[in-house]
Length: 385
Picture 1 (cartoon, rainbow, N blue to C red):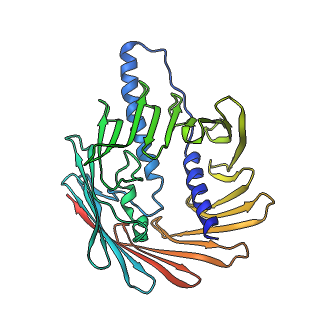
Picture 2: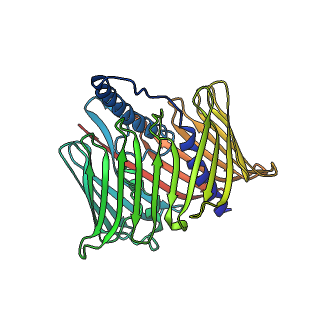
Picture 3: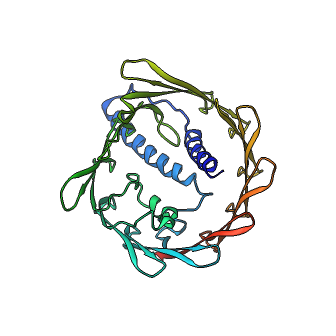
């Protein structure tokens, strides 16, 4: 069952990202002056799109530094999280420190014995862009599994935080439009290269090329079309050399409203032979909300309340049998307060209850399984003036 839950979470994350994608056209028949103006407008749109995509996860635990705006120059930031067992005993805590601009400066992991088991530090330039990350001490994840559930993984988004190397120092470089063009991580003692990310962009500001290499042998290239998407960038081709130089090509079809209705994934080997081919299909209601996803192995049905909040998912296997049921409840402010995972017979597999302060910051999560409290998370915030 645990393995099935993990698969479900991965699928839901992938589906949620793809469902955000819509299509709009760009014009190329302008004078040089208008092209420059258009470029600036598109870059602004692309930034807003990325911000909007991040905001699209507002019903989940808010792992972001900037949780809620009080007024133009004030914001809440997460300063501490407390992880506890079901019986109330402490697992560990994570503490966060910020500069006066709300930029994350450090993450400190502390175990139940009040011993520091991890410390990560960040530096920023005068444009508030992260330019350096230093791993002073990396937690032992096998001995401290609770660390994997911390909010820290989503704080700095320029590059995916995982993996973090035990002795790594990373440098970030940007273009004149504040877009990341290179991430280089090395061992701070030996100078050995551990991980690199390189990105290229179209004149419109849209992502053109994304490359990543890791010292483990992982190597990946992603190519994008120069198409502005409302919430994200169209993923059109991905090459993973770790898979024997297989090429993964994704072709997507959209309806007249810009909703993706079909995705075809074709994997070919280095000789051009098709290794596998799969198809994903999407259905929408009159309000443009995704109500059904299906592929060869599963289908997922979605239901919404009158406010547009997703309240139910039903996952079925290829034969149409119910596999899992996922239900959500919200308060009158739109905060998700309950999430329930049910077995096919309707019995509850797991249950989460969330609590918020008057500013809509989530301050506590209690997770139950088989009727017993399994985990508890508590969050503390402060205001950056």
